[in-house]
Image: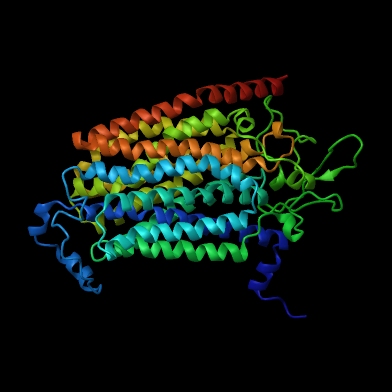
Length: 527
């Protein structure tokens, strides 16, 4: 018999369940990347909505002329001001641009609290599909203001509010779905890699928006809107909410003897569910994440999601989710961590334009380095937290390093382009690392806490509470940046450093608890 080709041997070396996991991992990755892709254009287009009037008389760099020559020019409306697009061409443009950010993020924060509760009661595939199609519509709507020559501020604010509300369908849905398919086995690392969709979406959104920003900024919104709408159709056609929907043995089964771990392919020992039942196997990938309050790592009947746990239990209440230990602390920490992250998301290109004196396209391209650093930061945070088994301590360590790094960034970025590149990478890793860990692995930990007694439907609500609280900070950050920046960019960085310090303060109790648990465990081993 002929030997199988290497490619076929590779394919058959993985089980059907592992291929399904890889598919869901990739699909949810690109689904949520498209959400961030559609949010990024506003930060890129800010430099085009308001221009420095003096720059219109300056000679354009040769490289920019060559770039512009490669694109078919689009005729701009005749009443466009030399200082930008009305009404953003006035001296109060920073406040007006801040109002756009604030309207989107306030709507997102309010909608997020409702989204998790609604999402628990509807099929994820339908809920996410409708949200993505609506997001595509309202993202493109902002860009249509260019083609229809609309200069009414309220048109753009209403487009942002509507988009903010419908975009809340994304995060609780994808986290719940990925939580259904992956359990405790290396959750921090897996979700750290998976959460890079945020940075990948920001990078793609920046590049797509920057391609058209100087010639036809309306397409900077229309094209991302089309992309997220197409991904919504893909979601409807292919998303599988739960392993049970396809009779996948990723879920605990009484008939099988052992399970293969999708990450490391080792056999796991059986865990006793109760005294009356026979031993049943438990895949580490399907274990729940947050161990009990006394640092125990045992699994019992109160922590296992059974088939009835998914369909037979009622959805958790808002107050019930708040009573889960750690939800309030991590939510408040995320409020300040997300304040810093979203200030960079919405204002970094404009800051680079002002400090480095680059055009909107080049500033947008350069700002993607912050997201590249964020990819490494999210993966590193997940890897460290898995190795140490300390989520709060990992976040606290990165927040402690982030504050002085932001100060260095504000000072070094004025010394030249090379220094800015280095600091963008480092700042991106330290700012986005805690944000990524809390919104993914920590949210899944808390959403499967032992106090829930196997209620798998709580994950969506817990995720929405944590991310919704963080979104309040996301709304405040860009607004404060718009109000503070006229007095100098240094003051914006001071505000971000204070926010990082506040985020760290809210984690101190959890960090102390983790260290105490570790000390007790070490003492127990010595005896």
